[in-house]
Length: 401
Image (tube, rainbow, N blue to C red; front, side, top):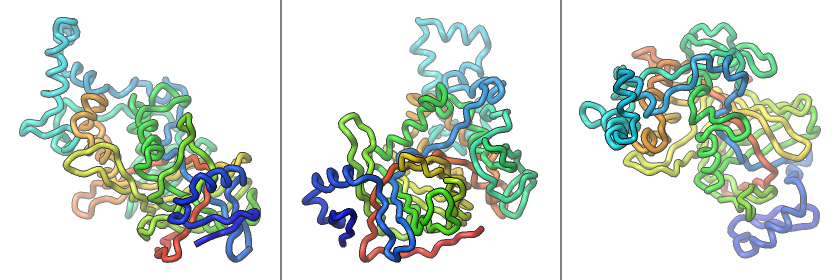
């Protein structure tokens, strides 16, 4: 399969292996990936997603987290001890004892359960309390349930709403509510973000999974009421610069797995693309951590929307909002096992318990407990060439206004 642009011929993935150096040089020189759509009704713009992690809004810290940060695993253990015992354990000569207690005893259930592989065994354990919550009223995200009251509905549990950063009412983002005051998620501030954002974004650089965005039929990059938006996984790995940075205008083939093809209508208003709602949006997801549960997983968003700005430098920047199963959000910790709680210093039991309590989407028909949590992921994407194979299967989009 070939396609043409500015007098250059680009080959399908298999043929490009023989001429990869030429293609990389040619695509970088050619400029933004804006090949014409086959029907000539507008541009087709391709992008590689380079950032995809939980969006943390950094307001005034005392307003966001007036109760302080959620304790790390070692801090949580110390809080279960008397002041005198805490002081004793923190003496240098007692370092080995302290490490044994918080890294082994505190992270193991009564029957030998691993705090991260089986966090449900700790739901009633008072040593692992709920996370400290974000108390401010502003968050990234979207109104996912179409309601601004926070009342329960057929597919939601009662919850508090946020106001969006641009003043939108009814923003649903319970993930930020429970993770926005956790050290590993909040980090030291917006410049570097938390260690979890660094980790999740590094997965894409390392080639564990990569995502593509494609806009078809774009007649005006500032205002266009009718754009087809594709969000795909790709098995291709990206090339990085010598300094480890992303390189624009590389070519990527859309996965052959139709489950990871997501196509939906969108509209551009004042340079901001917003899609209709997708009942389901599925993408490949792979963790670098090993374990008996395996490293493969999947983003299985419900009621998802993408909202990104088309920037002057050819990139996209915005968010993807939706409901994600709490079992998916805790998968990275399960794959890592107890090391996430000890080396990573994340109290997996408190993390999972908080998600279970504050989950606000898709209640279990028997228990009434919600199984999904509302969230928003940062999305940054750079220009890329999106290639569709000749035998590519199709998936019917399930989209609503």
